[in-house]
Image (cartoon, rainbow, N blue to C red; front, side):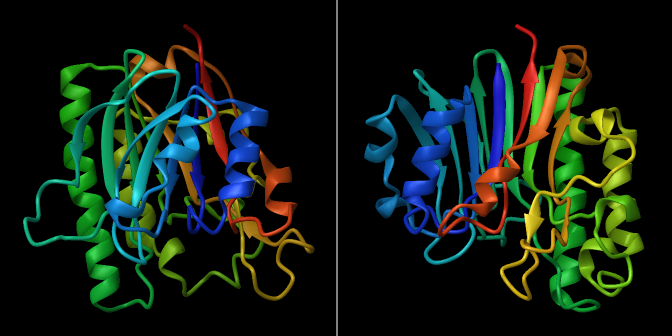
Length: 257
């Protein structure tokens, strides 16, 4: 079972590249972030043509997440992250697919920091940790994945100096991420690449892709029930280099049936 995450940076703008990736790599489940469209405009019919069924949680022009399943309907469990009734941003959706709880998220960026956007990021991470604690307590096989907007360690960026003042590397951000891991979750890509140097994002600016100046912010966290089934995990890096690509590459984890 292959479960993938792809910050698509505009689902309609990247549709040719997205369909290309889905047909060539054929993940069992594909989680999208930054779909950047309201619910009524989500192009579900395009995915149905190639055998994928979808659920989504959209927002006009910003954010937005979706879960696609190959040959089956994702069973929606929850849309939106609990803990703040005033939070209207579309950043979280959760579904059951093939006996696995798939939790797809687009975590706030937090820049500029310090400030209200950084405070929102940290509060969102506390709410996420609370939801993940509920999943752990229920002992369900779960994969929590998406664009976390967290560079966990210095080995996960091309330049520590360039990212030193960014919200993605701040001690508070990293502390919140490792509190989640210490609750019993496994970072699949880090587990299989302990020396780092694996990037999932390259900025559109300053020739970052051409210079391979990237960092790792797209993560796949496994509950113990899924960590025991871990076969492989990786980054479909080549898709970042295609014409009109997203600034992220897809990431994926393969679980033993």
